Amino acid sequence: MGAAVEILDTEGLDALTMRRLGTRLGVAAMSLYRHVPGRDALLAEVVNRIFAESVAGRPEQASWPEALAAFGVSYRQVLLAHPNAVPLLATHPVDVELGLRLLTELLSAFEAGGVAQADALTAVQSVGVYVLGHALAQVGTPPGADPAPAAPEEPFYDEWFMAGLLAMVTGFEQRLASR
Amino acid sequence: MGAAVEILDTEGLDALTMRRLGTRLGVAAMSLYRHVPGRDALLAEVVNRIFAESVAGRPEQASWPEALAAFGVSYRQVLLAHPNAVPLLATHPVDVELGLRLLTELLSAFEAGGVAQADALTAVQSVGVYVLGHALAQVGTPPGADPAPAAPEEPFYDEWFMAGLLAMVTGFEQRLASR
DNA sequence: ACCTGAACACCGTTCAAGT
DNA sequence: ACCTGAACACCGTTCAAGT
Image 1 (cartoon, rainbow over the protein chains, first blue to last red):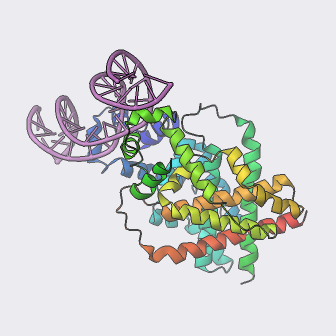
Image 2 (cartoon, rainbow over the protein chains, first blue to last red):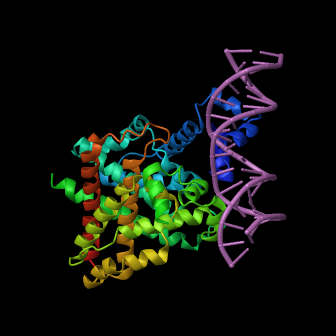
Image 3 (cartoon, chains in turn cyan, red, green, yellow):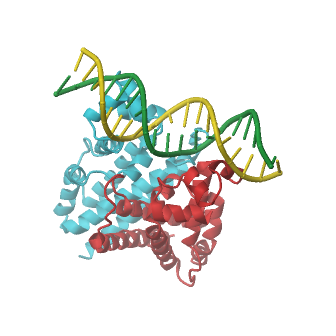
């Protein structure tokens, strides 16, 4: 399954095809159907695998607003490390069970701060969809345009990202503090 | 071009194909290439057309935080009215010129409130990507699942959406008020 | 049991040919 | 000038056949 992520990162989403993955693994394309029900299931696995990177080994000693912002930042880092995967994350939702399991630590920071679990989930999910939406805006080029990434815009996106993230975290902090 | 939106809304994104659009218009698929350079250009036009609905005829007499929240709400309404278009909006960025033109009125509300244009753009774009990300989460089902929309979850998404939106607007309000 | 070639029903797009 | 049929190079997936 790592081979799928490799093709995605190096050759793009369109190249991640059953036939191509098959030849990469030295096997006929149809043999893949023994291990996975179809292409969409394969893409779903890729999505889950990449999302899992977002929460791998983060230090978790902070107030919930700090932890929430840190989650946003590290989630974004993973997305920008796999630009070709961003449209995939947008299209194939992360498995709910897996997501909750991975975010346990983060949610416990809210609990320690006396925030109700429903409110905590709302805040975390809001940051999650903001991060994904922002990554789409940064990475997304009309499919077919030449792949010159043009890094000069990077600081613009970085500043924009932090402004929106901090606005959202500040807003939740204020609203959840008033009980 | 309205025919493309029609197919998208009623039959889904996968059905919006050159050949199918051609037969819908009573013409050979290849004749479409006289009017549009290719499929991606067609999808880009669909995206712009749908995004334009988001700002059609909104009343614009309010403080910028109110106007910003109103934009988020109406943008979301349009996305939910075209669920099959949401993945498209995520993948094909709205034309920048068009977007700025459509948002002129909203941006002027910030100007009237004494907010610098760069800060205004950041706030508007942040809300925009949040709305899109949220719509993706609500509409997105693993492609291939049965299309039973299951409306019972709707209030959950509505509440989540408003909580995140208001947090963000509140956050910007607070940060931009301190000059 | 596991793998696979050929086949089916599609795609977007090109291009030479028709009116 | 405008349209189009056939063709090219692909897809995901099925299925009967091979070992």
